[in-house]
Length: 301
Ligand code: FE2
Image (tube, rainbow, N blue to C red):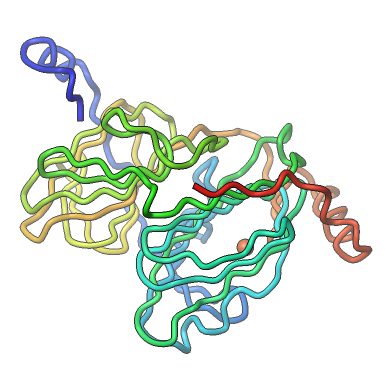
């Protein structure tokens, strides 16, 4: 998507770029979370414990109300960020910063739990499909106890970039020279929802150490040698360019990148800290009512 690069210069640069190969293709495992929501877990299970700085990546996708109706009632988080992106259906949310509302197709919420937040996420769908994604992004030790922050990123104001046969919703980071909706994003540097027309090619310069793609729909070949289809997650090796060739039915995928933190990770349910002692402190504060500190409030865009 280098609009400014043309001709000989562009060819020279392309020839020196290193295509990022696919080092793993991960299929999800079924899990039940919250009050009994059926999910597919792509990161955060035995096959892929974490992908620093990403701790967890879930897809919830079902037409059956019983699979999701119980939702995620009030629960705490500390030491990490949660990113929820809706594809179909609606989700009502409420949190201890005072934010509440409903997010629908194409909307995202980027919640930095920091020192602590309590929130609920409840499906607001009577019939039809609920389809969305949730990503957990770790915070480094120096920012684990930062004031919590909430950004609601509405589809109406989210940049949508079209370049020939590729379109991308820019949730975070930049694509095609367009900056995404999320203003600061911590260790995650990119979150795109990319659609590639049938038989067309996607290329994107991406030098961040950690990068993965998750296929939402269609089929394609990544890095010119790895075929993938719906609900498969591809972990990229190092390099500086991601390429994907869409199949005859087109290809839609999520592309996420970030910088590894490289610190000890100790998880205790919804808390992600550096030591077991910090996890015990979080549970103790939750019990004695001192868990939620003052926050900065939310931002809507
Ligand atoms: Fe949550």
